[in-house]
Amino acid sequence: MKRSRFFSGIWRINAILILICGLLGTAMLAFALHIFLRESFRTQHTRNVMRVADQEVDTAQESLSGFESIEGSPILRATLWLKQEYGFGSGMKEANSFRNVLLFDPASGRARWLLPGFQGILVEEHRLPSKDYSASPKPTRGFVYQAVGTDSDGDGRLTRADAKDLYVSDPDGSHVHLAINGVENFNGAHWVEDTAETFLFYTKGGQYRVAKADLRTGTMISDAELRIDGATQER
Image 1 (cartoon, rainbow, N blue to C red):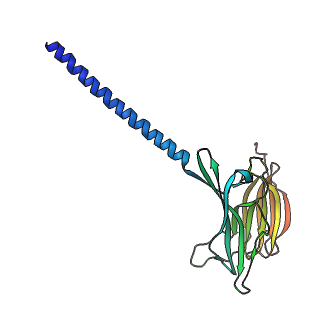
Image 2 (image 1 turned 90 degrees about the horizontal axis):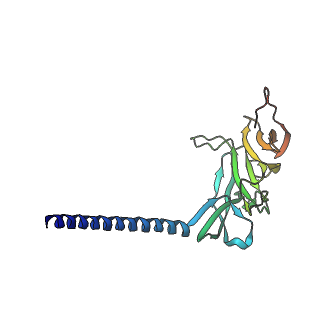
Image 3 (image 1 turned 45 degrees about the vertical axis):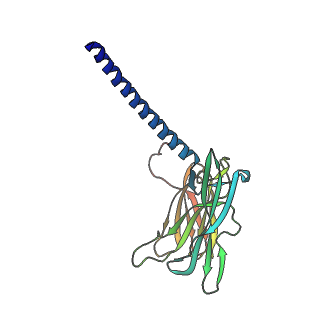
């Protein structure tokens, strides 16, 4: 009789443990399902990616940022953004792309686009010298823009993975010039103190190259393969 009660107690404990494990397993499964559904149906956000297959884009809307001043120039500037939404699996994907710059002259009350009619994206801009947040910031000498206008890798998108074109401009955007096209990687810009000359470092055709631009006129001075002394670095 005692043995029967003993085994009966063990069975009850086992049944309770099985029930608890079952409830825990169900709760974990429900939580995992919740996370999966939330990630599947949420809107995914990307930046500086533009779809070029129009039939895949559900909505597209352009918007202008607030105008800001340029150190050392009376011109005000604002950035133009394009927001695209399109289907992505069971959810939506949202891409915000930097499209252009609008320049406003308070003296004349007129505005103009930095790149009139440009249909690509600007994946990055470089202010020269770099933006200074000190109490007495240095005047802006010019800008370098990395632009993508064609889907060079054929993936249906314009991204920084595509070949880039480098544009240079003076601070107010009155002199803009396509400095270099078909750049694989942009390796930085260096503004020479007290001049308007800027060195542009980039990679094209597997070569490390350096170009020099005059930001006052937006024109190129020189462009050549970067001379590297010593042994060749294997790639």
